[in-house]
Image 1 (tube, rainbow, N blue to C red):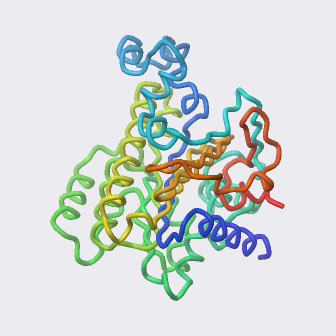
Image 2: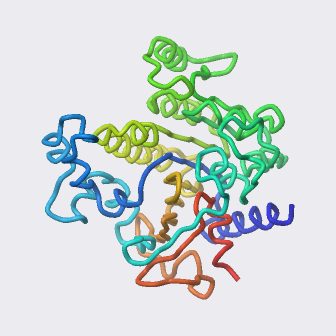
Length: 350
């Protein structure tokens, strides 16, 4: 319990340093490698017939470039042209960042428990594990009087119903093939639900990210929650299926969706300049996290990077004071695998 309280305390402390944050949006996308984030498309994989879906030409045309810097911008334009522009990024493993898992299992449910509750739990040893016995940060926020009933979660994978312990936490979870909109769906939500029901079920326990995203966006606009969690998953599914083209397309799509969320926030008075977005890119063995604070951007990339920038003007100093940062080499900070900003930073804060 002490670890949980310390994690939440640190999380809220960081938010208070970032700006007077009134709203929080946490975003994850599963199975996305640090190599693509920092280097762009891997030409070896693109040319390998086992992975390229017989379309190496198309992959190279869409994502190829003369340098790694250009390739990563083609793959993740919002990340590199907006989040990283004018800021500080730490976390390129090529420069020495090493990230070690703290749970012994190296797969999804244990990792998401670690991200959302703040520490590893060896009891959670299966993706089929029952409802999470641990309090997640999403549940914690919903327990606060000022936030209760103003928290919503959307996940492509059905396990998020259990990971977030929907029944105990009281947080509404729309996961996989759950319909959105509650008891009074609007016209857009009714259409999303119809398309979801009529869609191909590529994976029995996970829907396509497009349904998760648009359901979440509709909820964001309609309900204007104070805390929100969105979990995408196609990057992981396509990676498991050895479909590198679809994996890259999915990663680029998530980048565009984060840009859409950012643009909506910046154009909406209820959110503008008082909302923090934490975007977490996870692998089975590694994690990358980016936190987008309005109007400042704190990027924590969990293979691992920290970035502090502002959209409008340079900030005088990083959100995280240098005296608190340890193990920095060549602009690299190492954080623990599959952990939230709360615990990731805990490893390096005095």
